[in-house]
Structures are given as C-alpha cells and as structure tokens.
Length: 296
Image 1 (tube, rainbow, N blue to C red):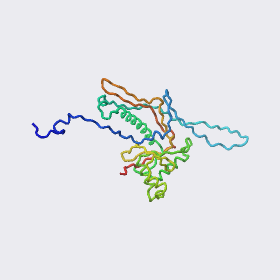
Image 2 (cartoon, rainbow, N blue to C red):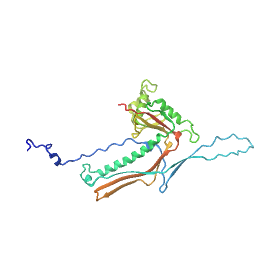
Image 3 (cartoon, rainbow, N blue to C red):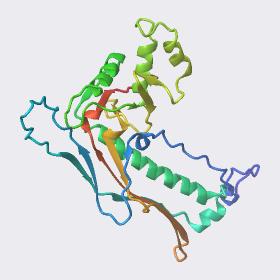
Image 4 (spheres, one colour):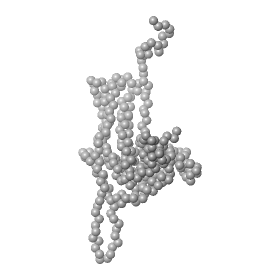
C-alpha cells in the first residue's frame, strides 16, 4: 500500500482527468507567387487538350526593283505546345468524435484552409519544376549569385537570341529562394562595391526590404518560399518574362467535397483541381542556379 500525499501526478490519476486542447495555430504556408507570375491560359470546359501556339517571325522585308516581281512568299510557322491538364487532389477525414471534442470548435474550417493550402503549394511546385528546364543557366552549384550575373541575365533576355521568339518582352520577374535574394542585397549594399555606397538605392534596399515590390535592373524581385535547397544547399530560381511558361487550368473543374461516412463515424473533406503547365518560350527565361546556404 502506498503512503504519502495524493497528487494529480501520482499513480494513474492523470489518466482519469479531463483534457482540453487549446485552439490550434495554423502552420503558415510559404510565399508562393510562382503561379501568378506565369501566363494563365484557361482551357474551356469539355476540352481534353490545350494547344498554345507562338508565331515565328517572317524574314526581313526585301528591297524591291521596279518591274521585278516579288515571287517568294513567307510561310506561317508556329511553335506548338500541347498540354493535357491532369487532376490533383487531397483529402482529410477527421472523426465525428474529434470534431465534437476538439478545443478548436471550428476544425472544419481549419481543415478546409489546410487542404486549400496544400493544393496551392502543389500548383506552385509544378511551376517551380519548370525553371530547371530552361536552357540558359547562370551562376552554378555552390556559386553565390552576384549583381554582375543578375545584370547579365537581364541583358541576355533583352537580346534577340531566337528568331522564333525574339527578345523577352518586358516586364521581367526574378523568382528566387530568399537566400539567393539575400546574396543580391549583400552585393548591392556592400560598401566595397560601386552600388554599395549606402546612399540612395542602396540605403533604401538595406532599410526597407522586404516590401514585396523591390526592383533591380528592371526586374521585380519575388521571394518564392517553395523553392527548395538541394542536398548541397543550392537552389534553382529564375529570371524571366511571365510568358516563358504557361499554366493551363481546366475551367469549372475545381471541386470541394464533404462526405459523411456514418458507419465509420468520420467526415471526409476533399479539394480537387485540374491543371497543366509547360515551357512556352525558352529564350524568355534564365535559370538561376546558385548557392542558398543559410546565412545564419
């Protein structure tokens, strides 16, 4: 027989006590602007495939000689990208007892927000995966992104590198891992560089980033929180025009479901969407593959 005070933590008394779970905090979704920074070309309902065409330029006009027939005609040529949207989805099935007993009594709304965040993250990651397919790649593994490479990438995009597409139209966007952006900020604000005199532009970048509207050499700078580091702490972002890639959602296919299984005593929630994505104009984008090692 045990002797001494009877406390809430002694013996097995704690297993007989009521437990309440405090209102839960939502895990934050990372910044994911990637889908908003590409061309969106919705596919109408009832269609299977979306063909995205780009007309190539004609040859230069010829100098004519009076009385001599201009006999050579130009043929219309297009680059074709065919995309077939596929279905994506996620489900969660909290039990009825959990819903009744959970301290956060709005658990259904919380589940809905988490499901929606998951589908949005999947969309963003599908777009991010396209950056690696761009033929032009700058910096390189274990190499720090610097202002010279950034400036040169913008110059490359504005050069007429391909007669089928021509120079990239403005504006340009730089979609990068936050540590890649951090390296650029360091390069701009370093007092040892011409840009880093810590006056004007440099001082403003140092004091006010991150505001979400900074620009560098005409390109808007966007932090994509879903760009991941690889095993060597490198990351792959891009500097591009939005039409370098295309996102094709299937119109009218987004679906949110709520299904009650009374015998199992659960409620199944689901979010489903249909889309495809692809590279439309390779010369209008540059992959930025550089070191993204944590600064601290």
